Image (tube, helix red, strand yellow):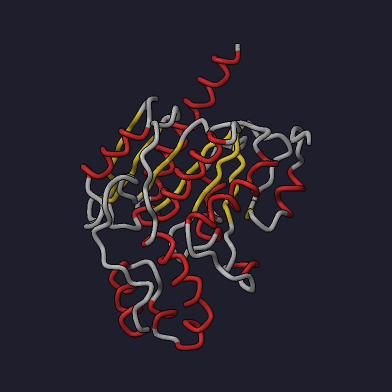
Length: 266
């Protein structure tokens, strides 16, 4: 199958992606991976802060948003092949990956899978709010906890609104997906492979007790290309509180990556 010249209509209608502002001929696609329990909607407003020629495509996993009726996947062994299959038709343009927390590791493993299949690699990998994949977790496993304990652990992470945690009907709706995502990240097993030949930027929040600047530096072991680590003001969800500074850095990096791609092609 020829995957070139895929129109913006195709990806905008694909259930795997949320594309708020489709582009007819983007210079670059930024594929965004959400954190555990999150949906593609967390990136909905990003296009207004990105260059006009960049098409933001947030990945919508099963069990959330318009895919709420589908069962959520519970392991990286299930998630990665599905994500790669969804991405494959849309690698006709230069692209980059941005992943936060669980999304960072999913983006990383997706890169590895693309490499194994001989498919194009991203121009850049943004690993946000995540320890390097080879670093052990420092948090208790919560996906099997009783509801009260599970909700209290979610409250500590500060990523799920109290309006949901305190509402039994809403929790009945979202709990299966939350548990599935945490099961996936808590059972993730890193395998030692050669580093990627993909530039990596690792971002963290200076108040995040689970991801320190040292943990960010460990991402450098996963690339033979350029590496940059940066801390922003905020906790684990600094992508919201420090969004302006974060987007400024992302834009600068994407601009440089695109220029390098053009120069290499010439």
